[in-house]
Length: 187
Image (cartoon, rainbow, N blue to C red; front, side, top):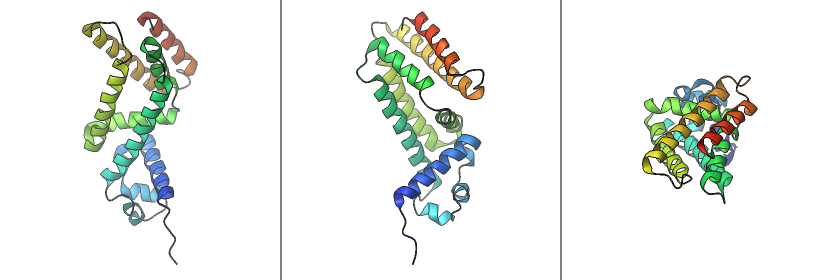
């Protein structure tokens, strides 16, 4: 008698395999064959769940971005203005585990050559920009734009530094940098 497919279990396994491959080798290495091999399954077992690589990538990235958005919203819930901005930035830089940051960096690096990933990243970036801008109050448009650019550079830099050289850019060092930046920006 054939084994009954537990779709939720299979989705969880495939998602974990895609995230692992992308995190450690890049999204270019995520293939249906690669995922099947990682899970010791046939490619048919994967295509039974996802009809294409793009569909599989879209699902995994949407799930990851959805978690990230939910966690960001929870971190700033009930906060406004500078308090919300500070909570938002602290969560993004210090909240997720390094594996989540590595997956995010893999997504950013792969997006220019992967239309599915580019589309999803563009949607997230628009959401992020709107969320960040909603925290900036009482400044003119030029100052708002400059402030948001500084924040993006600092956030991206601290994420890369934390993943690239964890022993040098540990959480306490990243927190010290944020404290300095927050002080200079009046946050």
